[in-house]
Length: 78
Picture 1 (spheres, one colour):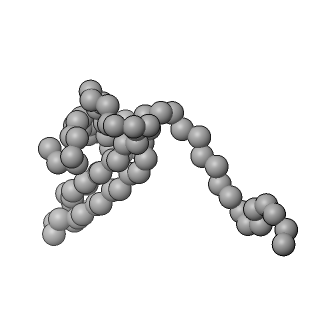
Picture 2: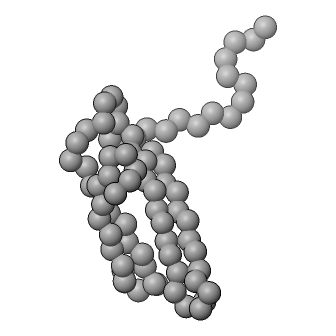
């Protein structure tokens, strides 16, 4: 039997504290003009989670951000 890896493998290097995952859910109101956007960000830490991190999200309309939200939620809830 031959040794080694016999399939594609992806190696990813990241900073010790990094964005591990992002999930976005968009919704459109019945008026087809306004809507909602929910974003969940999962941070990755080398060990126990560090305190004091903040995530900032900006929504762009093609030119500049027209909405910005800052939230630091440890459990994923505000």
